Length: 194
Image (cartoon, rainbow, N blue to C red; front, side):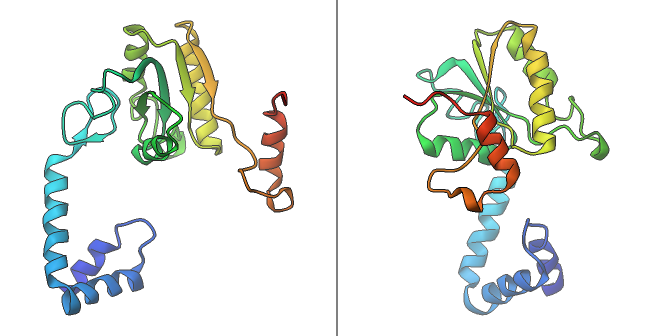
């Protein structure tokens, strides 16, 4: 039983056998009530959390809080790779539009194509809606760039403005510590200084 619990914790990203062992022994030796709460919360989440029918984010309802919010700007659609990306953008408070979650990126080697990312659903959304701008917020990786390029080609047929989030030197960052790709991205994405 202890070994199977250890293996269960190891399915989490970044959790190896030693970390899992610490979790298991902590719960069994010091916090059995916490372990029971964790087990109940996991069961509740696995049974009740699903994908939003509109944006594919995780939600307990058919439509998530963002999609059901009529105050949000429906003319803007931010495309992200994961639901955690939504959380990061929302924390900034700078975006008031809606989202579409890919749940990954294009990777033919791994067998992940357009249908696995719901790009057919996205295309239907672009056909039937009043979206004026797509904001590509995929990661600045090779796969993220390929995915962004694919989506931009798809969206062009609908005469929708396509923008890409900026990539480059973070606020508070120093040039000497940035890698060459980040510096190159920052230089190519520069804008007029007022």
